[in-house]
Every structure is written in structure tokens, then in C-alpha cells.
Image 1 (cartoon, one colour):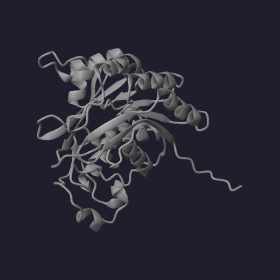
Image 2 (cartoon, rainbow, N blue to C red; image 1 turned 90 degrees about the vertical axis):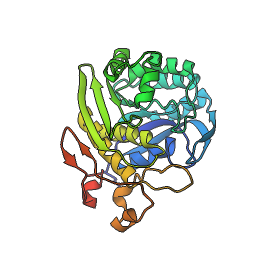
Image 3 (tube, rainbow, N blue to C red; image 1 turned 30 degrees about the horizontal axis):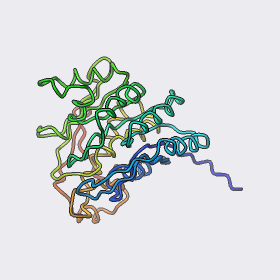
Image 4 (cartoon, one colour; image 1 turned 180 degrees about the vertical axis):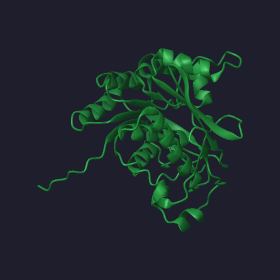
Length: 304
């Protein structure tokens, strides 16, 4: 039997399928593989959707969710968990029990509560189950500002500042909360990482034109990948944002709906990306490092 010394960190994702390949499980797998990890997957729900929106969702039985995960975890050591749409309260409970058996493994939780179009993925019972069972076990939580309001019980309060809402989530047990500004009306997208001590870093990115399907899934999976590859939290979050921004910059529109991030942008020829059907692609910067987007293809390869 040949000897294979190469090892890729394995990341296990719990997510719903997306037949369009834009979001959900397919987005996770593409992102993790692109960033040098071996993706492992547990299907939590099956969706009927395209690049325009979700038409239906069918949750997988909670026992099947548990059996999928247990079979993999008994076979392959993993470096990180990533959680997206869980599909039902029963699945939330099942997943919470599974990850509680591996408290030393980092967990990235993307609280997908609705699609970009507004299709609901989480009931109030599901939200409460997330708060009680998943958030306390989370290493990095990645809500946008709308998800932050719902998850932190801020919907009925007028103009509660984001730092206060993020603090509520760290008080619930999340170690870090990365609040993304994609839904804000700011000129640039500002993403802020909070910890127990407050703001840890704030990154500013040029807002790209167009609407994207799967950007949140891509970011959360990229964070899981960078953590699995050994980066500390702040650097993992920074590198994951850089990767995600470039996947959006080189995004493409395969159907009649939203653009899809190109998670393999770094592997394509320059003329392929420049001629693609793309929205505006100005360069992005981070306040913390004052870095402009790299231009050489080798510099964009997240595997390096």
C-alpha cells in the first residue's frame, strides 16, 4: 500500500443542500476544498431553490443527522466544525449534543435565519434553541446585522448598538462574534469582530455592486478553514474576509438570479476572470493592515 504523508485538515459542516451550488452545503464544500481543507458533510435539510430564492425545504430526520455525523467522527479526526442551516429544532438539539462531545474542536456558526430574498429558515422556537444549545458552544459566530438583532433579542428595541447586541451573544457563551455589514447602508462593508473585551478588529471592504447568493456561507466556511489550518482567531477572520471578498469580486451569474461567488477564482486564468459576467470590481482594503487587494494570481491562492 503506498505511503501518503500529505495531510489536509478536515472540517465537518452541518448544512442544507443548495441545488444551484451558490449557498449551503455546496458552498461549504467548495470553500473548504479551495482553502486547502478536506470537507466532510452532514446533510441537515434538502431545499428546492435556484439563484433567485428558496421554494421549499425538507428537514432530514434528526436520527439521520446524528448517524451521519457519528459515522464520520468515529473515522476521521477533524480540525473544526461549521454549522449553517440546521432545518428543525430536533436537528439543533441533535447537533448540539454531537458537538458537545468535542469541546476542544473550534466551531464556526453561521446563523442563517433567512435567505437574501427573505425566505425564512428559522422559527422562534428554533431561534431559542440556537441561543440555548448552539451559541454557548460557538467559537466564532458570524451574523449579519439583521441576524444579530434577531439572535440577540434586539428586534423590539430602538437603535440598540451593535456592540451591546454582540455582548449579549458573548454573554450567552459565544467566544467571538463577527458582525458583517453587508446589509448596512454604509459606503463600504464594515465587518467587526467582538470578544469578551469588546471590539478586537474592524475591517473595511469596498462594497461591490450586485447581489450575491452564498456570501455568508462562504465567509463562515473560510473562517473554519483558516482556523483548521492553525491561524489564530484574528488572523483567521482577516484571511477569511480577504478570500471571501475576492470570491465575490470574481463572482459570476450562471442563472437569472443573483451572482454566485467564485470560490476557485485563484485557479483561473486572468483572461477568464476579466471576461466573466461580473459586477463592479474595485479593490478592497482592511483598516487594520492598510492592504490593497493583491493583483498577482499566485498571491490570491489561499492554499499558500
